[in-house]
Length: 450
Image (cartoon, rainbow, N blue to C red):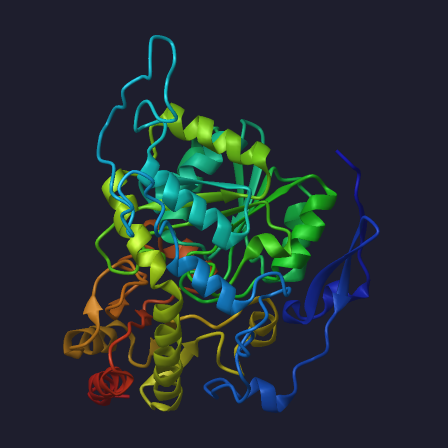
């Protein structure tokens, strides 16, 4: 492994929020960024005044895929691919086993755990939309996480992960590390110094979640990938919150992308599934081997439904994000709300970076309610168009209380370190009428005694 020189200047003593990590000729350096103006620091709760990235509908993140082309690819996923009967929508193949052509001569598929034509359709389009060499469709988002860890990490290896990652990811990393499968280091990857210190351990994997769940922190994918690759580390990016419609981490140097396809890719809250996408054919083949070995591949019917969801991904994401902008406006100005976490707000610390590496700001919003957990319970009880439930990314709007739901497994100390308070609520903004969603939130918040 290539040795790395660590260059630390006097900037190490500056406020951590003023530091970002850059790489130059194999040396990891810490560089002071421009301080935020008072106007910017006071702008939390101010909506963006410019078009979101990619708003012209022509260029993708690096100009590699036009937004219009992406939409067409997604809509045409598997369409008119049936060579037997000419079905416009490809048929679902539910068979668990497939007849051999003759003795000792298998067909393309022989057993659905190993391969299935419906699942292959979905894997192909997800890999294409993310710009990867191959993809594996799994039975859940967590089985996608487990597949990556099983295939790529060995005892003695180090995994660096975002300290405010999804509770299920935090749980499996902590549990496997406790059994000696690897060592894990939870850090704030959006902070340059923390990221630099973790990379000094030469990790096998750097697990990025951007935007993070539930505080919507934005991590500089390109900078982390450049620094990680210098020391031979692989970078995994969980892209569940945005989907490839709004962010494509492989274009910024990531080696692996993971998804809970349960969320935006399927989009209808009727499937549990996951996906792992690899930059190179070699890593993709490793995932395919382990998915067959472990038996974590997704079911054909789930793949069929998810394919249906993918075809409307671009259209759904446009409405999701438009609604989220209206909701963020409302929350930012309401006296019962202490703080709003949404990258589309100009005052969000990751606003500029989100504009740079994303095609949109997404539809996940978290906010802190004044008055503690009692106020939280009041808001949740009085909401009518936001269902109290875990998960996200469906056409319907959901509200979750991370401390007692999605991130309960982290424990109070870990949540405190990550900044997840008992006053925090997380919204998955759906595609209902924006005015109804805003009116619902307003009436629920109006009853809070602040």
